[in-house]
Length: 427
Image (tube, rainbow, N blue to C red; front, side, top):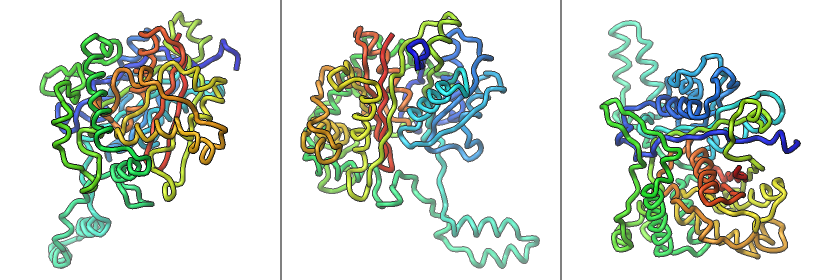
C-alpha cells in the first residue's frame, strides 16, 4: 500500500467508564454505543451517508439484540442503510473490530468505517442451567391445567438457582483472575509490587483528568434520571498503599490479587472513524493518526500463563510496521490486573523468554516507565470488555499528540490465551 493510501483514524470518542450497576445501570448497551457513534461522526464533520459499515465489539450481548452494532446504529440516529457487524474477541473485541475495519478498507471492500465496542455489565442477566431451561420451556407448552400440575410435580428447587455470571475458561475451569494470580507466581510478581503499580496508575489517571487530557475525547452522557456523567467514576486519587494492603486476596487465600490491583467491572463504549488517508484529504478532514500494523497471537493455555498472549504478538507487529522496539515512543498496555502488566513487562525484558518462547536472539527490549501508560490504565479507568480496545487506541493517539511523539504501541490481553498488538503513528 502506498503512503497516500495508509489507513487513518480521523476521530474517536468514548463515554466515561463507570463501575457496573451504578450510574449507567438503567442504560442499554445500545444506548451507550449509539452515543459514542453519533458523537464521533459529529466531531469529524463527515456526512454520515458516506459511512459504509459499523464494526462493534461486545463480550456479553443483550439477549434482545445480540447484533449490538446494529442496535447501537439505531440508537445513534445514523442512516439505517449502514451495514453492521458485531465482533467478540473477549477483551480485545474493539481492537479486533478496528483491525477488521482496517482490513476491509485496505482490500477495497468498504470505503469508510466506524469501529469500536461497548459493554454494559449492568445489563448482563442471570443464566439458568440447561435442565432448568428445559423444564420451564416444557411447562410453557402444557395445554391444560392438568398437564401443568403434572409437570410442576417434577419441579426441583435447584431450578431457581441462577448460574453466577463469571469469566471462566471452559478449558481450564479457572477464572481470569485465578489465572492472573497464577501468572504472578510464575513470573515472581509480589503483592507489594502490584499494589504500587495500581496506586501509580490511579494517580496518573487522576492527574490526566485534572489537566484536561481526557476532555479531548471523553463525551458526557445523560442518564435516564437526568444526571450528566462526564468523568470516569472509579479513579481513587485518595488511595494509599496502607489502604490497599488491608484488602484480602480475591481468588486464592494465599494469592496476591485484590480489588485494588485489578480492573473493576465496568460499563462504557468507544468508537473511531477509519478511512484511507487519501480519502480524508478528498473530504478535507484532518486525521489524528495512521494505523501502521496489527498483529494477533494465541498461546496454549494449558501450558502457559493465560494473559501472556500480547508479548507473542509484539515482534509480529513491530516487523509488520518495519520498526524496532526502540522506535516506539509510547506504550499503552491494557491493565486487566497489575500482575498481568508486571508479568508482561518481565517477559518483554527477558532474554530467556525471547529465546525460548519467541525464537529471538535477545529480549524484545526495555520498558521505560516514562513511556508506559502515562495517563493511567484499566485499573483506575475501568474495563468494559468490548470497549477497552477503542479506549486504549484513542487514549494513546491523544497522548502521542500531547507529547509531540510519533510511534505508539497498544497491547491487549484477552481470555482464551489471546493477545493483540497495534502500532499507530500520530499525525
